[in-house]
Image 1: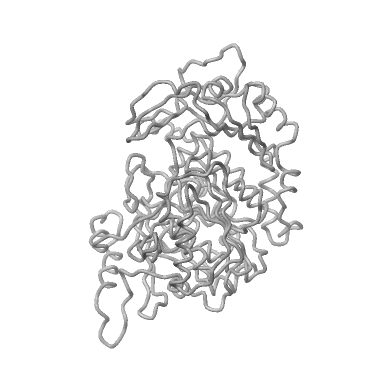
Image 2 (image 1 turned 135 degrees about the vertical axis):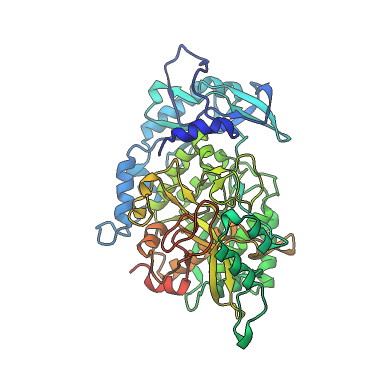
Length: 576
C-alpha cells in the first residue's frame, strides 16, 4: 500500500482528515503502537461533544496476515499457466492454515479484549477478525483513542478524533480497528437517465470530445438513406437485450455457477422484485439465499441498487446455480468488511459484485483498506473473483458532491475498486443496431477511472497499463453504464430505467458466470486471465470519449480499461 503525501495534505480541506500530529494520548502510562485506523476530523459538521461512554459499539479488530509476500507469490503461481500450482486454488481451511494469523495471535487479541471488559467476542474462521461488543468508554480506553459525536448533514454520527492504538505487545498482530466511526459510508453508484442526454454531454465539453458529441447526435437521428440503420440512443435494455448486444451467442448460461451480490439493509423487497423481473422477461427463477452478516438492517433506500444488481447479474448470466446476497447491516466500512469476509470463508460463490464504493482515501484512513485487501487476497487464492463499480463521477472522487453521473470532485479513484485483488468495472455508453446487435461504445463521461494513489499496481498490469508503477490503474474492464443506454429494472413492482457503473459491475459478474460454467468453474480469479487477453478479440477496444481527465485510446486506458467483453469471442479464447 502506498502512502501519498499529496493526499494526506489535501484531505484536510476536503471533508475528512487524518489527525495524528500534535494530539494528546489518553493513557500515556502504556506503551502504545499505531494501527492503520487513523483519526477522522469531520468538516461541515457541528461537534456535539464526546460520544457518551455508555454508548454500545460493535468493533472488529483486524489481524495482520503474517506473510503477505508468500501469499502474493502463491496467487501469482496459482494463476500462471505452467506453474506446478496452476489452478490449485485453496479451500478456506487451507488458506487459514497456510497464510492466516496463528491461533496464538488470535488468543492474544481475545485475551486483551476480555481484560478490557468486552463481551460477545467472536473469531472469524480465517482468523482475520475478532469482533466484540463494548461501550464507547471501553473502546476509547482499550485503543487509546477518543470518540466524538457530530451533527453532519442532518445525521448524528460519531467518529474517532484520535488514531486507534494497541499495546506494544500486539504491534505485530493487530492491523486495524474497525467500527470507530459511522460517519464514512460507501454509497451505491446508481444513476438515472438525463432528460436531454446529448445536451448533457455537450455541457461537459471538457469531458467529451467533438467526435463523441457528433456520434451521439447522429445516433439519435433517423435511419440513413438506403436502409442503413444508425445506432439506437437513447435506449434501454432488458437482460436479453444485453445478452444480444454483448454477443453471448452459443455461450452457455451460468447454470452451474453460484454468484453473490453484496447488499445492505432490508432486502425483502428486492427478492419480490427479482421474481417480478424474471416473470416479465420470461427468465427462469434462480435460487436465492440471503446470508445475514451482522445485525439485520432496516434501511430500504438501497432497494433500487440491489434490484439492478440481482436482476442484471442473473439476467446477463441467463440463470445461475445459486444467488447469494451477503447482506451487511449498513454500508459502513466495518459492516461491509464482515460481509466480504463471510463471502470468502463460505467459498460458496465463485464470484460477487460490489456496486458501491468510496474515495480510497476514506478507506485508507478508516483502516478498512488494510482489512478488505486481506480478504480480497484470500478470495484470489481461493479462485474467487470480486467485481466492483469504478464510480460515477468520472476521474474524480467527490467529497462534498453527492450526485452520481456528474464528473466532479477531486482527482481520485474509488475503493474497493482500487484494491489490487478486485476487478474494477468502468462504464461506457452502449450503441446498438436496430436489430439489437452491437454497434459501438463510447467511454461514459461519468465512468470512474485513474491511477490509485494508495494501492500498488498488480503484476498483471505490468507492460499493459502505462506508468503502472504509479499505482493500480482503474478500471480493469468496462460494461454499459450510461443511464441513457441503461437497464429496465423492476423496483417495487414497477419498471424503471437506471444506469451507472452499478450496472456495469453486475453485467460483468453475469458474463463471468457464463464463462465459468463454460469452463467447468475452473477459471478462478478473473483479473490475470483478462489481462492475458489484452488486445484480443475477446474485448471491444473503446477508442471514443473520455471520463473527464482521461480519454479512451487504443489499448488499455484510464477511461475504459481493457474494454468491454464480447462474450462469444472471450469464451473461445479464455483459459487457453
